[in-house]
Length: 229
Length: 229
Image 1 (cartoon, each protein chain N blue to C red):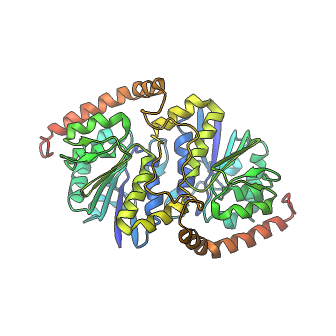
Image 2 (image 1 turned 135 degrees about the horizontal axis):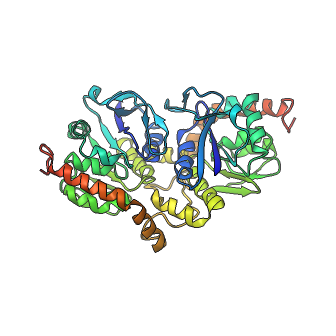
Image 3 (image 1 turned 90 degrees about the horizontal axis):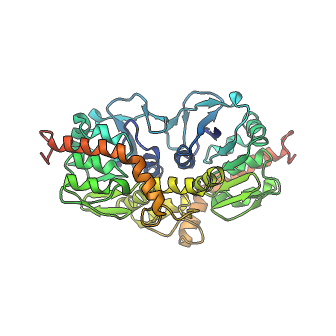
């Protein structure tokens, strides 16, 4: 039985979590848990509450740890119980993984040092602060670390992980089951393809949140006990 | 304010719902509700409970009705309160939409008569029973009806709908925000592309469930009050 744990935290981007959840729940002999410090409902970015199925303190070990992203990443960068949990479980897991800005939490736990990693395109330059090698690819695999790009990259990431765990046949059967033969109606899903004014517009919209995030990263790096201190 | 309602029912495929939810929640001046008969938690296909935000009886009118799919579709095909809700709201909505096998519920409500529609590839031949013109495309737009193919097609569908509601610029900004620049690690997302043995394997795996679904569709068509009776 493979035990996969997805971190479920307040203000996460729900598709970061549910893309991989839908794929990984279809794996044979696999248990998928949503993990948080308490079992009370956790309110995600657009207001949808989700229920944790397991408490951090009740997790001795996981085969796969997956950390999704979202605006809720920022306050957690200096949240010792969360960072300690990610470090403790991540150091023993067969695969330590993230989607989107979840990579920053792996970084704050010291798990990205010298490793190639992906994150949401607006946060690529923040990976450097954690000693990671920011890599602009949809899914990046470096040792036991597998990281996906922004939000929807979680589906590509999870199919890749499925193949690592159970072979390509199983991953392809899941891909066919979820009819993942994408056909975006527009070609604007990456800053290299979208119109410049849209890229600028989004960078401006998130600039204040990103400034807060960078300040938090500086604090996280300065904390005693974190590997970058 | 555009009011979008996603039907939230037991045993739905959670990514059918959350793909569009993530996209549509990012639209300006838009309220997105998860709608069911009660406000108690609804348990989805892999066990994740979700909370409805609005009761069917409290919905007078919606701008957009969206019905996701999943194994939970089958019992609802003859569930009068649900079919009546879909028909009542669907007849007045600006857009009546579905993802995956949610199209079958639109069919049972009589909303697909003579219309082109998409659904999950394993269920394409079931659309005929409702007088629909089964169309093997990722997103199908016919009048006020917009239907998506299986599971992950919900993301393509929702971006298309976003452009219909708020223009292509807004849709592209959302696409860039969720970094929807898909790169599936394998090319097995459609029966025309997957290896034949995988297609056969999945058809066999779902054959019993599909037989139950077909029997239900025959019952639904035979019910007094449904347009195909």
